[in-house]
Amino acid sequence: MTAVAVSLDDDADAARPWLDEAGLTFPSVLDVHHVVADWFGIVNVPTAVWFDERGDMVRPPTIAPGDDRFREFSGVDSAVHHDALRRWVVEGELDLGLMDRWSQPPSDAPSLARAHRRVAAWLHRRGDDAAAAPHFATAAQLAPDDWTIRRGSMPLQGADPFGDEFFAFAVEWDDRGRNSYGV
Amino acid sequence: MTITVLDDTESSVDARVDGERVWIAPSDLETAIGWTRKAEGLCRGPVCVPVRDQIDDDDGSLDLRAVAEALGKQTVFDPAGPVLAFADDPMGRGEVRNLHELSLPDVNGRMVDLSGTAGKKVVLIAWASW
Figure 1: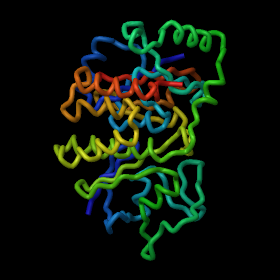
Figure 2: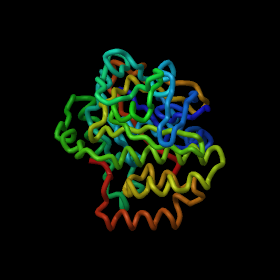
Figure 3: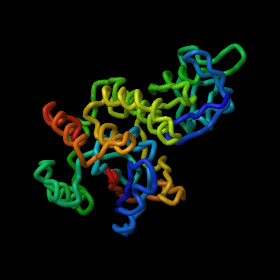
Figure 4: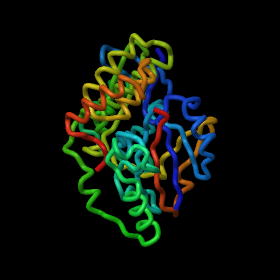
């Protein structure tokens, strides 16, 4: 078994200090275009997705904190995830019911939102924030509960992902019933 | 003109932009989105998708947004780039992707090919500084 770390940051400089401190012993990559969001339906971080030896997804994206420092906010107990992971790796035990809950009725909204985010992030990188702004806004409207779009776009829009803008979003997301927070 | 295509990677291709339509040479399709136009449809590796709608122009060029539609992908075009982005929806009707097809750069720009994890169970951990 191996882990693979995928950073959904917009550039290497944002990710590098964290990776330097972590000193990972497994592969670590940077995903500025959010390919893993597009391929595997990841909508938040930290998220874990399990793949079997053939590369097929066997457990869909779930919120998987490494420890309990945000437990009060997330309501997710890290030990539950770690125990499930150990049972799968060591004993081959897998809750297949999770895959049933993964599929959603077809909707253009999530993928259209990710396409708008891609255009917005690219326009921002080349310095055209005026052209980027309507794409960020449309992406947020189409996928209001997707953290990779809502919170992930904050640093690109001059907003603080740990400040007022984030807490306003978190309240809004909480009021809507905490959608899109893993299966 | 040259347009930027944002799919799993960023690429540049020569295109003719006609309103909301973006036309490219079939030989550039693989560079743009990793698929090729064949007699049997749109193909990538061993997979082919039959094409029902009109995606080819009389001069042989391809309507890139119609190609996206045939593949079940969404597109967003902005002439300010000009830039065209593709995106898929794996939870809905999107294509089921395999981890071993994934290739992404590390923070130093060196490509890491996830086919290297074949034969192992993998826990992919998505994280971000935000």
